[in-house]
Image 1 (cartoon, helix red, strand yellow):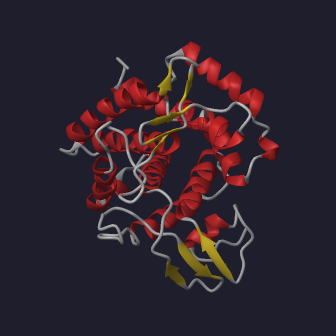
Image 2 (cartoon, one colour):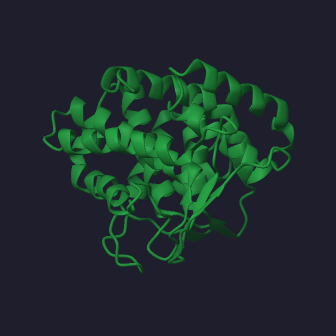
Length: 286
C-alpha cells in the first residue's frame, strides 16, 4: 500500500472511508481507527508515528471554548490542504483516546522518548481531562455540554491510566498527581455509572437523570457496555465482566455495526489486556 499518496491523517482515514477530493476528517474516529490498526498490526508502525506527530502539531493552546489540549475536526483535500473546522464532538473522549494511542505506540516500540520529548503537550492533554471533571468527579464533553457519557468517561479514564504508565516509564514528577486522579476517577465511575438494579452501566447522566440501557437499542445503549470491558474497569470483577460480555455477544452483530463501532468492538479484548496489565501494576486494590 502506498503511504506517500496522502498526508498522514488521510493514510489512517482511508481505512475508515473512501478518500475524496474533499474529506471531513473526524479526529476522534481517525484516532480510534489508528488504535484498531496498531492493535491488529494492520499498518506500518511508522504511519502511526506520523499521525501522532501530526496530531501533536495541531493541538489547540486555546480553542473556541478557551481550553487547551483539544484538537478540531478537519477538512482535508486530496492534495493535503487542511482546514480546521473549529468543532469537536467530545473533548474528553478525543483526549483520552489520543493518550491511549500514544502509549500503545510507545509500548510497541519499547521507547517512551516520543512522550518525553513532547511532555508539555501530553500534560496539556492529560490536564484537560482533569479540567473537564465536574462535581461528581466525571468528565463533561466540553464546557458547552455538561452531560456525562459512559463511553467518553471511560476513554478519558483510559487516557489517564495510559499517561501514568508512560510518566512512570520516564520518571516524571507528575506521576503522583495523575495517579491520584486515576484512583478517584475509578471510584467515581463506579459510584455514578454502575446500575446495581440491572447489573449494567448507565450509558449517560444528564442533569439528574441516570439513563438505564435499553437492551433493544444498539447505540448507544448496548454498544456503551463495551467500554467498561475495554478499559479494564471490570477485568477483576468476573461476575460483572461475564454479564457484560454475554450481553454484548447476544445483542451485537459486528457485521451490522457502523465501521467505527466495529473497530471498537474488535479492539475490546486487546485493549482490555493492555489496561488490565496497567491496572494490575498500579491499581491492584481496585
